[in-house]
Image 1 (cartoon, helix red, strand yellow):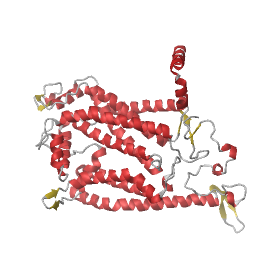
Image 2: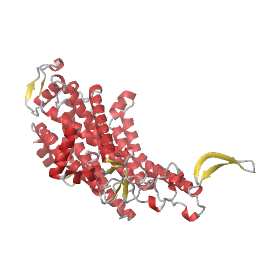
Image 3: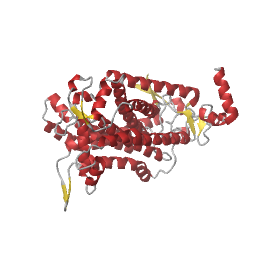
Image 4: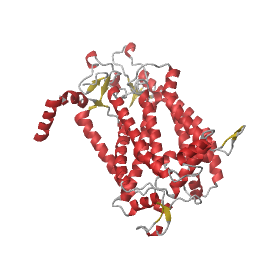
Length: 506
């Protein structure tokens, strides 16, 4: 410890490090658990980078035809690509290769799931409002890059399952009007999938997309750091301050523990839960296919949309728009375009141009919450529909029955989810107003002269003046009603452990 202290003193003496480090060490982070989802995504990305670097040392992204004569006996004398051969060798002949492969795959799934849950938290609490619209857009770009990174990485082994996914992507590109054929030749090197596709995917997966991901993560973290965090309303929490734990030592220790926990869970999943057993699928051959051929969960909604959409083509003169274009290209594009535009659409509709640092509960904005649940139910139904062949096999139900059931549900459930969510939010708001007007429920019954009992309600104001009654503003109600009493003027200042927004120092 003495050596560390001397080293730190030497740095400060030469570079004046303490001047810049001190305000950063005093930065305050909110304590609510929902703010940890973004950190889970960050630590999953770290595991992805480390495990991917190890795998890249042994993987050969070549489409050269070889005959397998390695340690996995069921594959002996089977013709395959060099990429698939090295993927099988990674699983059985490289020390820890299968473990690292599975850790890498699980980390990719957790990374995208954490981003999605993080975006849902931001959406339902209104954290995307001014001045944080840019971070919302960055988060959506990160999600898109994560989807692309997962797809190209999933396709690299050149096994039967991933080869079917590449063929589906080729059909999606060809379905795009006017430019589809050009895109097919540009990406796949010809009318059919050429030998350059795996090397190109390898370059994208290892160099291009990770560089973009890391750059956007850096920009996102910098924006969060200098714009300060949002926080839920509560005692002493205002639009101009931030209440929570300081970076050093409390938050640093908490974040380090979370990083260790995420890493441990991913290693445990990689060692105990099998995923993507490419050695069971065999090498890709265009004439072969397989039952239960589903992509990873994050692309399953597109798969479900393609399975449900009717085979109706649109003919415009000499041009024909295939049926697959609408569920596979137009629908995902429309959903993401709506998500990108939503902060600006909501601001235009509500005419709310103020800056917001306090979050809303989902009930405080019934329209937004209902719209979010409508999209979420739509996404969930399409994801489940992507497994209709598996459900038909397990439950012995005709797949046509499942297709028509999901078609009806996709049209009926999302509007119903909007209505139910909207009315539920309004009901919760009325319950909040009732507490403010009549007091909090105490569970204590008092007898009345008429022979009946009434529940005692604890008023939220204590001076008997109706003018001091707290008004309903959509803010979070505390568990203790007394917390809503007006604070004295001297307690309205930010005490130790809070940051005044804009100053960046405590």
